[in-house]
Length: 279
Ligand code: FE
Ligand code: FE
Ligand code: ZN
Image (cartoon, rainbow, N blue to C red; front, side):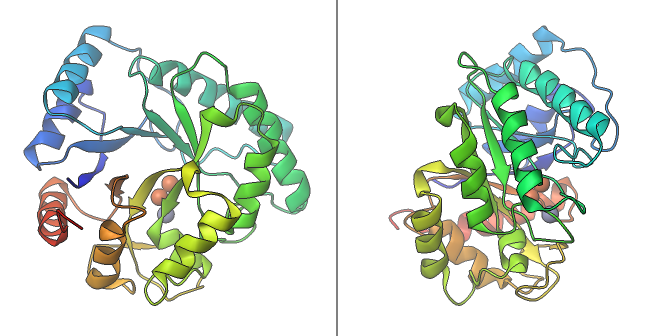
């Protein structure tokens, strides 16, 4: 079975987001834990959360994915900016624990001009403060397009971060198809090669989730502009190969394509149609 969903808005609450997922035949979803630009998050309504958990259980949902605000920069040159990112992420993980055993994804951040080594050190230090032995949430580093001074545009950079994290069973990776393609990994012509490289450098056992996006830009453009499935440079066939790949097909896939709920529903229908059940 294909585990697929898309990014959904949590603004109407937890039960509402579960119902939105059901409307489009999704069995998972991604959501921003709070306003992606701001920092305010509503208090948790545990009754509302319980209703979502019921929906997820009844409909056999795959793991859901909370996404940190993309404006955070945990490896900023500014100490207060780094502290703020850590505070938000701490609060997010506390919230994620109301939905036990799920996933929380964040962008490694941009080192600006201080250099990649210092940037990576800040990320590692923050993760070692953030992760707690008793948490059930797995925190994921997202693979990035390598725009500007963004960290995480290569598997090697992700690996260095993972190596520095003490609680290894609390940390993993989310692979974004648009980002890796923009970063220069040719998943269109050499998906096997890219997966082998990921396995050799990071290890496929660290891969927990896939962001499924087409890209508006060519290979190695370092741009990060998502396209609807089949409307970008990766193309339908490229995306269909990803969801059917023997080493990826069991993972949860999350669409972050520029679409509304109905559009995402159509993409999900198309992807389910392209998924080979015996694959
Ligand atoms: Fe992201
Ligand atoms: Fe993404
Ligand atoms: Zn992106």
